[in-house]
Image 1 (cartoon, helix red, strand yellow):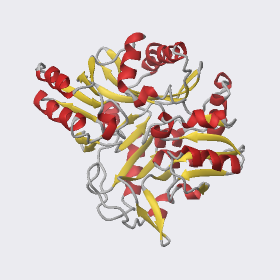
Image 2 (cartoon, one colour; image 1 turned 90 degrees about the vertical axis):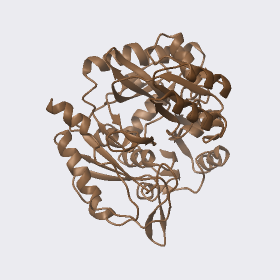
Image 3 (cartoon, rainbow, N blue to C red; image 1 turned 90 degrees about the horizontal axis):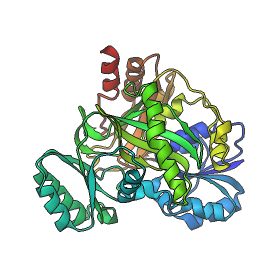
Image 4 (tube, rainbow, N blue to C red; image 1 turned 45 degrees about the vertical axis):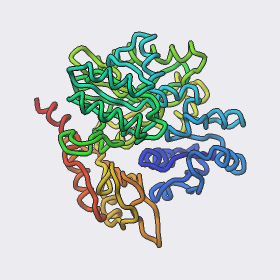
Length: 426
């Protein structure tokens, strides 16, 4: 089968790497891809949101399955377009993608099916948001309601700071139209976890747990990013909690989407806060998380292409996922200045040495090839991922690989997986 994978980040490189292992795969096209995906298949110079050109290419190249990686084309109805043309597509339809594209919609849906989440309100006018935040005397969380590349969330311990952030989002439009609506929530206390599940409209199959590291700095300091690293599994999520998350969060949401007439298919990602009162939803994503996908797929032993087809065909109940019991850790190497302004085009060295290490994969995120050299081409540049006998060993191997790679201005956190290691020690 010919497969078209849409996207260009670390998530897409990890998916391409895993698809390449399938016996069912004939040709793999990645649009637009990056320097890493080029080793897994054929990169295609079409933007991930140019649905018309992507569909035309798929028809010309007898693509049997399209896998949509990023949230923007999902929200724009890429899956709808492919299915209308008679091509199987992995991911939710545009209406179902509202779960991520519109946090106000997600909030209302959770209320309707009694899913535990932070108390919050949705605002369409800055004056109303400002008055509400000013009335608070506790910490607030400010969120752009639309798609903001994982950067539109601010935890403000001082409400005055919250007002300033709200003004930047709604008036200055630092995230464009994603800030047309604003969510103001209570701050939840606890440890975060990421739960990803395959969903075929009715059946739900949960993947192994993971934990992301959103803030730019060690100790979860500084502004939020798209994710500076992740590990799987997350010890904070026990088997008992996994059952509770399925029963009280995933099942009600999938049922609610069916009642709305927009059955959910693809990957459903629940970003959770594990509070003293149990798991509570921070957000939903409608696709594989990035960088959580990297350590999760490093541990997946099953054929990803077969699973994706089962989702598209409503046959997920016939799938059994097999996992490497060893944990995996992903460390993101970013461009200096990210998530603010940063320079591109920095030559990257040491990729072969790091990639030659046993149980290590260097997943490319923001990279490109110029004059025969791999160069930086984004904020998050690489996701260096390693498997180890335990979480500490996986972390050590990942950072050993990071130490072999260099590019001007490279930055990475040094504490990825420390929460898990500390929990194990306790």
